[in-house]
Length: 324
Ligand code: NAD
Image (tube, rainbow, N blue to C red):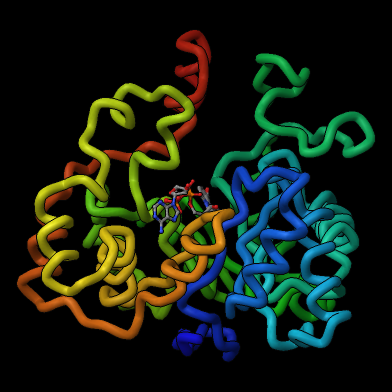
């Protein structure tokens, strides 16, 4: 089993550099996927209210703990605050629900999922609430500021509900905003990151500010083809580009592993998603070989500044004025 390195967070805790992403892991198989991943050596799990599978993922964790494969304190469980819970008074109650869903009493890391505040939807009405107030197409914004939401996240730490807190899908301007008033600084920033979206300046800022960066959608368009996005279907899949194929052949590695090694060698944590045991194993073994500086530069030069995971790629045209 490959030993996964840790990244030291500003909170003082260690975060495994490689974990398993849980977006789109179907409910029926989620307990087995998480259980098998723990057996394969995964310790970090990247969940969220919005993924709608926290109960089932928690069942996988419970089984592994019950069988003595792992202890709770050896795991690093990440979850995220959905957009409809940004109002300060909504934060702690929803975190308590999410913890109950997972069957644990603290999160290792809890993130603001998007810098977008939507009006509250009670979990008894619809859970997860998703984007639309009426469950169809009505967008209702909340007036909660990022400062109010961040302050509510900070309160989770002394309450023992989250060990570290962070943000996701924030750009430099919003990070600067949070850093102005944060009493607890964001330990991590989770962003879409792949060779078509390299974001070197944002990584430089995070390094300077001591914020660890986690890459999501490391395989680029692969995760977005099912949404029939124009860019995602027309671009060459990253695993099929000549550059990645020839580097992979040189190292005797899979193209997927080259993509993940490019990210880990740049200092990022990664959370590739897979439900297949062979992929789970391959994706974990991406810190024990080294690309050359030239190879890293060659991969970075594939950059096109293309972001797939933005509301304008999912929403009908008449709603685009809201989120651009
Ligand atoms: P990904 O890039 O990790 O995976 C895309 C697809 O690649 C998967 O569906 C899988 O079928 C395939 N794949 C995985 N391993 C492979 C391998 N070894 N060989 C060939 N194909 C392989 O996509 P993702 O799920 O979008 O991102 C990873 C995780 O990041 C998510 O599951 C989620 O936890 C997180 N995420 C967070 C946000 C956010 O807004 N914070 C957004 C998207 C994803």
